[in-house]
Length: 168
Image (cartoon, rainbow, N blue to C red):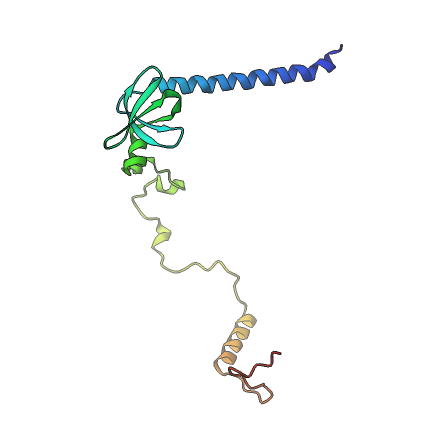
């Protein structure tokens, strides 16, 4: 057999190795996260319930889901261990100071200018449009004069009122 015929099999085996390695890595991270649970930390179960850890055993976790509600879960049923800020934001609606986390849309707000620019004191609007020539200005004046006096023609059809529709 030549190397060309073996190449697809080698690539397939390599891809399978990489996929199983990443899956094992994710599983190990989940186990580490569950082992770091301590009483008082907030958790989210795989079913989407938020609770506070009350007691951690080898295979089980006792959580407090509300006043007088204690539930026993398997450790594998814990989907995520939440930070205190995240748990308080989700469960209690308490926001921490978000002003430190805001990223500006542009860099102009990052720099503060003490003195206004010299051009900023000029209050005249800047016209960036096309400049009209004298002939164009005359046409504009003509149109304005025509608009001021409405034209009356005898051939114009009288306007229809409600009920006089020609629609069939």
